[in-house]
Image (cartoon, rainbow, N blue to C red; front, side):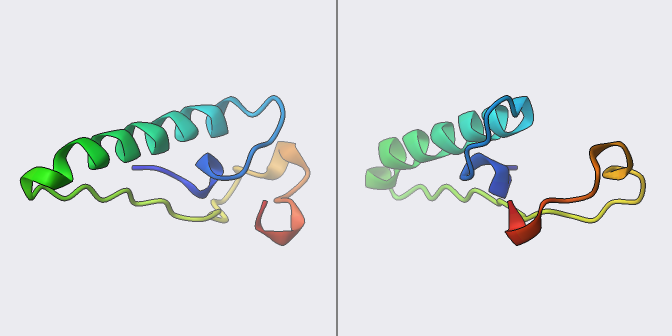
Length: 65
């Protein structure tokens, strides 16, 4: 399970860094196995407005980032 945070680079964002690692791993595996007829799907949902999550962060940033 990836995240849109894996595609958007934000300095100091450890969550985004881990999701970037998942994204890179999925792409690497996809390239290695598609020649054998195996598919790889990365699900990367966007930002979710979870109750309480953004309270101490000043709210989600504008523009989906």
